[in-house]
Length: 294
Image (cartoon, rainbow, N blue to C red; front, side, top):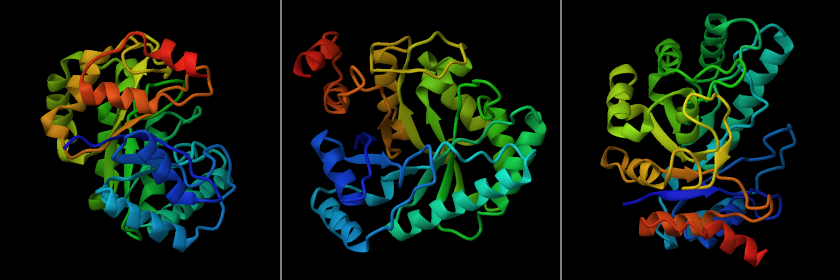
């Protein structure tokens, strides 16, 4: 069965229940959310009664709660230890996010590996491993390291870097990977030949480690290292390539999550993109149609 959804909001009033309602309005059967703003440390108290209401509704809608994903905030950077206080903050804040996942019953959280900010790739990787080993082993939540575009001093744009981190993590059961189509293309991987890419991934890391796929087109050419997402079918990756990725039978049980940009920065395209994906038919006038409804 196709597991398709998108990033959705998580507000103070309805929390997980609100996230679920938004996902259902898009015709999704899975979704991803942040438990608070990705750019700051503000976190509201989780209300268990809202979580339980959401779980009941998910059961009614036949949504597999184990496939719902949380994304860790961008402000967490385990790769840079040049300021010990910032490194300690990153570890402790990520611990807090995993505790929130535990309270919500979420099984997986996506994490950007981090940016070395001048300390070098090898030291950055060592820092990430150190940080993860300070956290994993104390949780039932799996951390999915996201493949990155290679912008600036980002770590994780090469599969070998992800492998090195996973190899250094002691709790292998709770570490995995989230592949992002835009990031992979921008990093220089030929995902038009996705079967070939999966073979390479399997040899380096192991395909069983893929726990989530972020489905995004790209505004930039292969190898640009830019990380600018585009709506499905309107970028340099293209609709057919993305469909081949989404429907690859080796990833059938892996949730596919859209993070495509809002149209005119105000209208979520996910309902229409999910419909295109389900129909396997590209609508070249989609963005115009959405704009006409704004």
